[in-house]
Image (cartoon, rainbow, N blue to C red; front, side, top):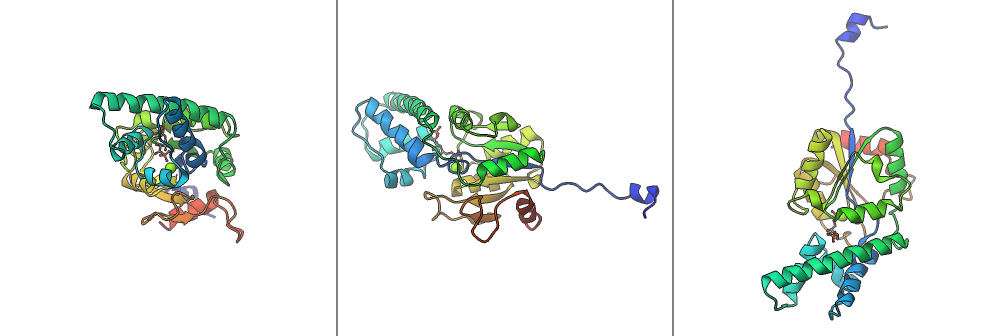
Length: 253
Ligand code: XBP
Ligand code: MG
């Protein structure tokens, strides 16, 4: 048995995993194909514009992060002939309409949370793990999504969204912002992402990153990821992503 003086010389163990930082679109829920894409098309319809983004084409457009930026990029590919101010106004109007349509679609229950996400969120919250969101999607989109979640948005200490980011992912700014607000070192946080842009953003801020692929991202390159999994649920071999597994990955990172 150790004496009190011997105990005093032993530094307290520091928990290496102190915070989980989640991306939103494609990571928490499959929001893109049946949510944002459909909402963009409804916005085009509102303004009687002859555009329709099918599932494949939207996959290509996702290379441009940020809905407004995606629209501006698309205008360029369509050789839309508008003065810069009118073009920006059209993108703004379409994006505002798209955001309203998206909120309605989510409210109608059209968007599924990805397997295992709600379970991991509940486990992390119950274990006292610090939780944060790092997304460059519009804040309203996050709020409507969490209205359909068993774990409320209030469980997250920091919710950083497009409004907090000067630049969209893959820029690391949004993750740096989250770490600064949490007051946590990158070495003590772990990001969960679904895309190469998200991975680059989190890695750029120094975070170990787990990637959960989806249909739009499965063929992307994920060099530098802690691990790449199809989803957070049981992988068929009895392993699922839980805190124990995340801590193990981080220990060996
Ligand atoms: C995903 C995005 C977003 C969404 C649309 O960001 O790039 O642009 O596709 O949302 P993340 P907005 O994976 O970081 O959540 O139209 O609000 O940009
Ligand atoms: Mg994403």
